Length: 199
Image (tube, rainbow, N blue to C red; front, side, top):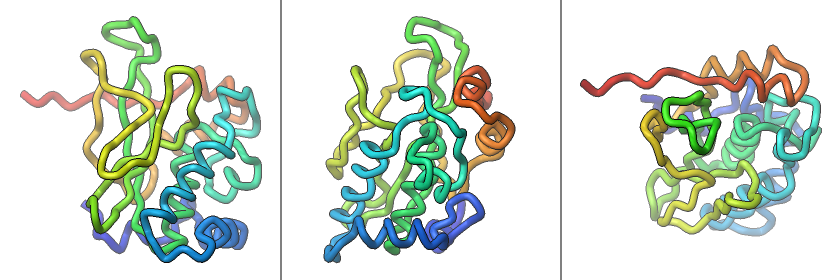
């Protein structure tokens, strides 16, 4: 498990040391000194102002937080990278979480793909998950600690809330976002990982 300090560091992908990311992070925080309030400002900005690549049929495919901010678009994975960067730039520990979800609402047994969201450490709530993928019909993610209101619930066998809080995105996600240049290519090749049996 990473140390708390790891959730405050810049990385190649969560590049909050980029001037544009720092500027936006400070702009969103404004005069607030309250980590929960700053988290809400950052969360709502990424959820509402950064367009989900597939929902809006937008290119280019983004990976780094600074790219997501520049092009104002990203898949859930990329949006989680930007949100982590904005929070870390405001000295709020933030990591990345994943769910494994069915790609077909009615399909038992898959196919499945990963979905990315964030966990933020708030003094009052501990680690608290938030999902800035972007709301639409059937998706209503909110910031209301300590209550979690995520974009998706686990509904069928094969889906799962993966328990890890990562300090940096996992390799299957990075590979897909690095390899493909168009939003539709990413959609046809969404990353997945097998679940480890609990037996």
